[in-house]
Length: 150
Image 1: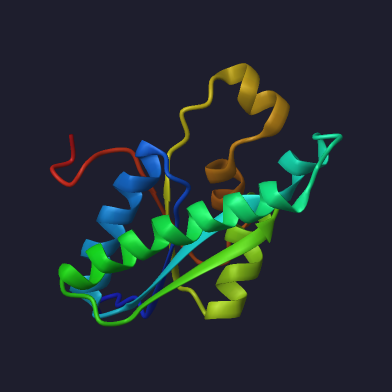
Image 2: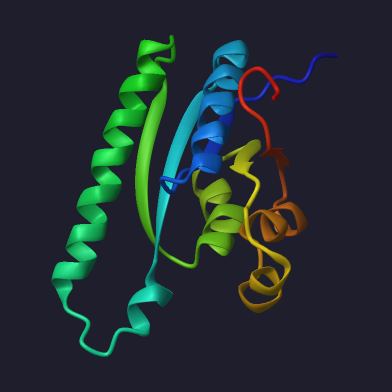
């Protein structure tokens, strides 16, 4: 029996690793005729450290996220996908990606880029991809290479 994914979640944040994951997710979704859910998580913890936080900062982050997602949705549709949904969420990326979004969208595959964090950063703040691998209830594909697997 061949595994066929129905709904694929890919987390995007503007990084090179996330772009690689997105492009591979588009290919996997196309092969499986699956729905692709693009998620950009705005980490609200970053705003808590700013003493003079105002709504403009959050609005700017949201505007950038929506613009990025619009471009990615267009790319996915240009590459043959008809079922593409984009979502901007606020909170802790690792828990939203591993637990909440898969539940909300009935995700059966999460595609995520490998992080470029060094050992000290991983120790202090934790790797999102590592957390997702450990806590997701569905399959997780961690992307480390481009479309040519290089």
